[in-house]
Image (cartoon, rainbow, N blue to C red; front, side, top):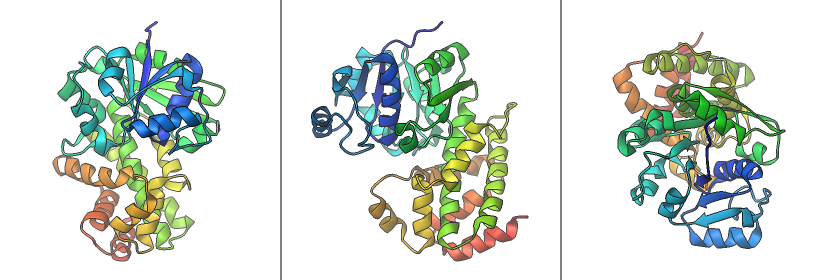
Length: 331
């Protein structure tokens, strides 16, 4: 059985905090890279993340904190990246340690901007990490519910199934059920697209479309997602698995969904800028929409929902007009 070795978390947000809580309960030691020393000092003093999921308590004696990503990368075998996708490149620019022999797990539900690459593709192409050393975490899993220890299902994707299985061992608990998949690219792209579709659901909610239409929107979204995944990575997958459809549903419907909340504000008449300022948290789907639009310029998949969200967010088309056009394309 593959040994995942010493595990470190890269990132300080809510999902990073939830994953750290799960892992450290198994291993009783983790490394944790946070870029801000003041946050680290507050964390050590308070016993919880001072900015996110403050109800999640930690034994700080089980954590080696550092704001130096090289210290963490050198000392740990498995690195779990949970930074917002727009900031990933900036964190990695500071890196002098080779990642080639590390086991890299991405829990980033976004595309690397400017590169238009899924995170695993980016680590492979830029940092020479073999695909067998690259994994991702997917599935319907709001950080808030994981922190509250509500039953959640996670999927670990990796080309090497033995390594995927080994990593599930440090996630599985009485409230986390896990399974493995070899569809890393499919999981990564679906986790980006579901954020785009959650923004669409939020916009429609803000425009006061009802539950009947929301059901039609999500039905069309899963078909659109399936068309894209079958084009970019055509393998035998079941789009109705929880890692695809389940993640789409929870992000499209849940009040915990930042992307739905962001879309809701846009539908109610907020500008993109004012919605971002008021939220104070990153809605990954905003960046994901632009990246997916760029990628699809080469793929030529029929994606009317993606196009509509892009037009609203980036072309400043009136949401009411754009969604009305979208409704006319649905059946």
